Each structure stands twice: as C-alpha cells, then as structure tokens.
Length: 450
Ligand SMILES: Nc1nc2c(ncn2[C@@H]2O[C@H](COP(=O)(O)OP(=O)(O)O)[C@@H](O)[C@H]2O)c(=O)[nH]1
Ligand SMILES: Nc1ncnc2c1ncn2[C@@H]1O[C@H](COP(=O)(O)OP(=O)(O)O)[C@@H](O)[C@H]1O
Image (cartoon, rainbow, N blue to C red; front, side, top):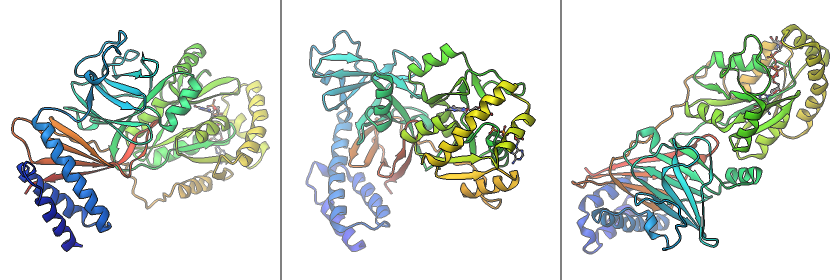
C-alpha cells in the first residue's frame, strides 16, 4: 500500500509547469495522503481521488492568486434579472436547477440573520423565503458551495470558530415538509459542528403517568448529558412552574402566528390547550452539546415521527387507570373537571401509544426506581457510565482563504499577502443530522507542510 502511494506521489510530482509553482502543495498532499493511507481504500479510487484533488487544489491556488473565490457572484446573474431586488457585490450566489440562491446582507424578515433571496429563472421572479431555525449572523464575506440533498455549504470568512460553517437547507426533506405545511417558500439553517450526537428522545404517556418525574431524575443525575426541550403552551402555569424553564407560557393568538411563521417543529391541541415544540427549543439544547428530551403527547410524537428529526420514541404506561387517577389527584395541580378530561383522554392515548407503531419502547411506571433504571438501560447509561456531555466543537478557519469542493471533501486554503502553507480539509462524507438541530459528523484534517 505504501509503495503504491509513493508511486502516486511521483505521478503528482510529474505535473508540468505551471503546477510546479505549488511546491508546498506537494508536501501538503503527501502528508494528507499519508494520513489517509491509514484507512483502507482501493488503489484505483484513491489514485483518481488524489489526481482530482491535486488538480482542483492547484486550481484553487491559481484562483487565490487572482484574488477570486470559487463561488459564483451575483454579477454572474443575467442582466435584467434583478427586478428591483437589492443586490450587493459582496453577495454570493449559487445555482441549483433553475434557481439562484443569493446569500448576503441581512435577512429581510430577521435582520439578525444572514440574508437569503431566491431568483427563479423560469418566472424571472425574486422571493425572500421564510427562514426557519436560528441562522448565522451576517458577516463581510462568504463562500457557498452546493452539496447533495438540497443543501448549500456556507463558509463564513473571519468568523468565530463556532460560527464559521453553516448549511443552508433549500430542498432537504425537512424543508420540503415545512414548505408543504406552511404553503410558502422556506429555507432553514443548520450549524455545522464536529463530532456526533445521540438521537433526541421523545417521551409520551398519559397525564400523571410520571413522565415529568422521570425526566427530572435523569436531568438531575446527568446534567451535562441531557437537556429538556422547553415547549410552548397556552395553558396557565401551575404554582411551581417557571416561564422559560417548564414551558414558554404564551397567548393563543401569538402562538398561532408563530406556528404560521414556521417556528414550530410540531404542535397539537391537548386537553383543550395548544402545545408545541419550537425549532429553536431543540436547537438550543443541541447547541449546548446535550441530548434533547421532548415531553410531548402522542399527536406530537406522530408529527415528529413523520418529520426528518431522527429520534428515539418511548411511551410510558401506568400500572392501571386507578393508579393513574390516584397520582393525578395526589399531584393536586388540576381541578376536578381537568382531572376528568385528562382521564378520558388517557384511555385513547394509551391505546394509541401501544398500537400506533410510533413508539419503539414501552415502559411501565409502577415502581418509580425500577422504571427509572429501565429508562437508563434503554438510553445505554448505567451508574458506571461517564457522565460528561458531548463537546460542541467549532471549526477554526483561517481569516482569509479560498474554498474548493471535491466530491465530499472541501479544501480550504489559507491565503493573504504571504501565501501560508496551511490547508484544512473538511470531510463531509459522514455528515448527519441537519435542521432542526445541527449538522454533525464533519471530519476535519489540518494539513501543514513540514
Ligand atoms: N404535542 C405536544 N405535546 C406536548 C408538548 N408539551 C407538552 N405536551 C403534552 O401535553 C400534555 C399535557 O401536559 P401538561 O399540561 O404539562 O400536563 P401533564 O402531562 O399532566 O404534566 C402532556 O401529554 C405532554 O406530554 C408539546 O410541545 N407538544
Ligand atoms: N412510579 C410512581 N409511583 C407513585 N407515584 C408516582 C410515580 N411516578 C410518578 N409519581 C407521581 O405521580 C404524579 C404525576 O407525575 P408527573 O411526573 O407529574 O406525571 P406526568 O408528567 O406524566 O404528567 C407526581 O406527583 C409524581 O410524584
């Protein structure tokens, strides 16, 4: 294998002038390939990959020396297609099918986020899509590269390490589903982070079964591992409940508007009140590197199951209806009328929970300690497990750079007055997740010339 690799390096070195200008490049490629050589790969595909890599990389050096970036610029849109849309020279544009996505400035609907505008070649119309989730803050310059599955990789220049890599989803499954639901043009942002995260956990079960108690125990024992998705609700707070901690207590009209604005991952009418999980609630937890827990009803769980959020679904059953009633009464938080309503709904919920095929796991909460132990087993944690949360790793990029794509690899070459010898390779072949939440699984190699 090593012999084969050294043969390939010779081939790369045989490139004629002007490629020979990039002497540090050869060293970088060598160290990159020798790093890669630890992983098995067929000789032919490796050879083709390396050949393409060297060509594309050298091309990027050429572009860097001309001061250009590989992304298209708005100037490239055909004349006369602006239709009154204000575009600036620093805006970046990428083409997907008949549409150009122009990225730059501030978003019309939310000036805190980077702006996105869409130009449709066929209708010659511009539109400002609704942006779902939390987007990146605007900055001076970007590179944008089209990826598979309706995603655009947006790399911010001169940005903080936890704010440099973003994915603009313009036609991902989540975007398609939200577009259908909201009946308007939507896009969504997902921040790119290194490392993987465990799936979010959806916990459902009838009122009074002990969901809240189990979740509180889990978060108390493993505070750095789990985070609670704080739902919105139109019901009144109970005496011990805090706004923003247990729920975001809200007005019906406000919540309905926010649902129409595409701010919610799911929502449902439960026991006569509106409840919903905002996209932001899930993102706040995943941004902190914790595994997100959603306490939602069966309708909400059904919506999440049908959505693009890949989650683990757990249903909690009471030992009997009598015990459920006793617990609800002992909790003392509901009026008699509300208790009766919750008990009536409980029967249908238990039936749906057991038979709908939504829930992969059913727990019986008879003895609390035993049920808690079973929950921990399901989640793959026992008392000996390490309790550290997952690190949310940002990506440090050079202030000035050029970006080149080659298959699933993004090559970021440091530029500036003195051409530096650092190259960063973002490997996107194992990315997973995406909005809502975060795009994870980015592998990063820094290649330095010796
Ligand atoms: N669909 C959905 N259901 C929720 C959400 N938040 C809470 N619920 C459910 O609403 C129901 C009532 O919750 P709550 O008023 O806190 O009463 P409790 O379950 O008796 O403590 C429960 O089944 C919760 O799981 C949400 O964001 N979406
Ligand atoms: N296994 C159990 N045995 C007895 N009481 C329980 C058990 N689990 C929870 N409880 C109690 O039942 C009541 C309802 O639990 P809670 O967690 O509020 O339910 P939920 O969130 O599902 O509505 C609480 O007073 C709680 O202390």
